[in-house]
Length: 450
Ligand SMILES: [Zn+2]
Image (cartoon, rainbow, N blue to C red; front, side, top):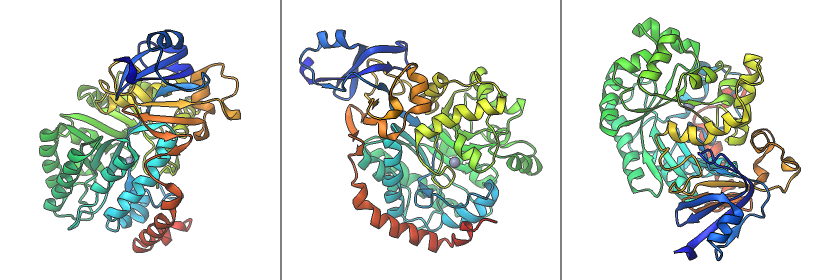
């Protein structure tokens, strides 16, 4: 039984589980699962013939979970920085959505999914926001994630206001994505909705029926102050309040942002056990505001971290997102202890797994869970002199320190390269598609600071 076991060794094993940190530790992988976690010497004695990855330096952590993003935007990063969210809808994502093809979805997912994997991400929650047409687009995301070997939680971010979209086409796009996920290696389907204010009553009702049938829901809620004001004026309550009374929160709900919350909103999040996907870089670029992360965590709301889309971050680097999450809260509260590196690592691992309703499978290094891991080796100046591995990981580590990433016990990144796609070979085609997309969408105006 022991001859198919492999060991991964590190100076600091940060489990995000009951074992906490294990010094000079190791994880034993049997097939797709974690068989054991403990001191390297003990596991070496238990599995004397097992091959060992890792030189005994560095940090081993659970693979990171990015709880929110949009591969829709994968080919248009680095534009539109002078817009706030609603301007950005008008100038960037609105024009983009009818122009994204399935091939663009695939190539964009390969590019940005690779960027995530290189920063230690093993699970990606994505919401593809496109205008549905005759041919479904969103299955391109599933194909891309499959090629990369990443775990996916995929949704289609439907909307029909102010741009009307036939409900039948919206439902067909959901169904095409659900079918693609059902056939995939590691993706699963979640019902999606872009936002409550950009949805007609008809779409909200139809979405609630889908949510009841599928049991999982992904949506943006209370992202900017304008959204709250509009929702109160048109529907008499906040997006969270309206989502609750429409039945949309009666499921396993993943809500992006939740920046502008009153006491009633927080009570609803708690009552419906809604998990929040916090996207600090996107909130900062779009000048949206500061999510009350410490309060939410204190009150028992599950909070995970997301990179958000490539047009509102604009990188897809989870390490950058982790560091920014801590720094934003510290400076906002003028309180250095308000969100620590340990808190942030929890949010990026077990918190993210909980936010997706997957904590039984992933998010911590524990026997029986899927072997999703990321190994950082001490091979650059960044990781020299590890005193506190949590702070070193969150504040100092970079992509160049990511030596290897595993999903289900199989490597997806090795020696700093993604294995599922030849990125240099992909780049010329990706550039062509990016130019075509920006041209078709007329995004030139978005490039000009206004
Ligand atoms: Zn988003």
